[in-house]
Length: 133
Ligand code: SF4
Image 1 (cartoon, protein in one colour):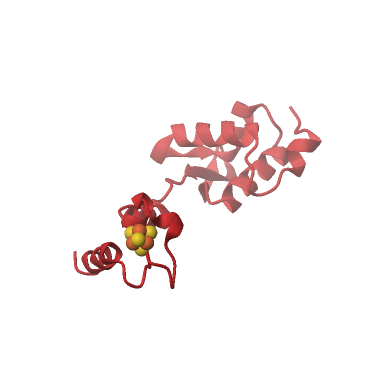
Image 2: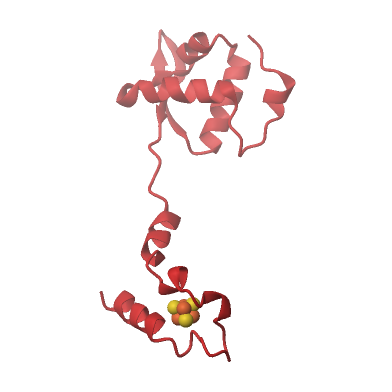
């Protein structure tokens, strides 16, 4: 099996079907990992295309590899990288209780207006509680 031109030209942020299959196989092996050459056979691709897929997955931080000897040949064992908890999610979680999100006056609130974030007791209270939980 050979990669299509479209698969070869995919950007670093996209993941191709073959990359997904490779990642799934690598993930399925857990701590044992998968030797590169074995992965190529499982995917039905040659080493040239296999190396491209590996490099893309490495570049995206989805896998790691360690040098090893497999069937008498030097190769790499590929390991799945567990995704880390996003700092953005933690930040979103910490602001989800901001009163402005459910405030009925939010569309009329602004500096100089009757409803004003600089004088709002609800926002001030939330800020105090967020600062001193
Ligand atoms: S600052 Fe106060 S009045 Fe303005 S939108 Fe937020 S909660 Fe509502």
